Length: 116
Length: 116
Image (cartoon, rainbow over all chains, first blue to last red; front, side):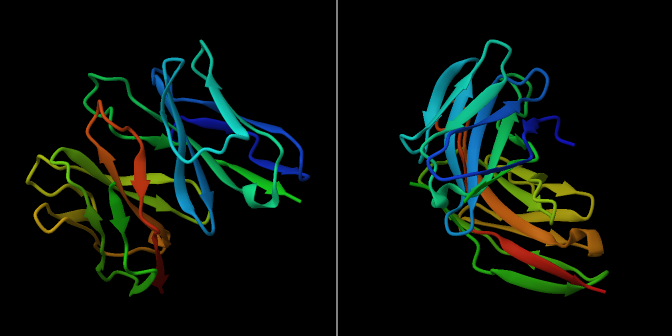
């Protein structure tokens, strides 16, 4: 158990719908990362938040957005869903600077999204 | 841009034997981190081992060790005394040093089969 939690574990929805994925980082971690794992694209970085602020953006579609709240949990919002959005979405967190391991990311169990 | 290449999509090894998974990467940076993550059938991403580029000594974690060749940009994972529980997809990953781009770049993965 990495200490990172994600809900829900599974999500089935229809095209055109909107869903919200939730992530709670490990206790004390300030950074949250979102990744998408699909069969054709592999594991891809979407976005990073650090202590409530967006820090880095990857290949995140405009239909997707995220935020990190004051209690440090994060939500990834996916809207106008398409069949190709079906994937496993991971959240990861990393220790705060000064711990000696801040470069390491610990992954949650993932949310499996199926768009029908 | 940095890239990570795993040239072996699948490998098999007899239980109790030793296996080496290959990984090469491309970067112009001198300071970075390398990781191996394991993804068993549960789909959880589990950190296996990490290597700091400025450290010449190869990292070791129990039965797992790496052969880090910085000039050749090679980072292979050796699994000794293979066990059935080692069967998984293994991802090689790269991350720039803290303060720059924090995202992890993953290879496509190597699926490892353990033969009883």
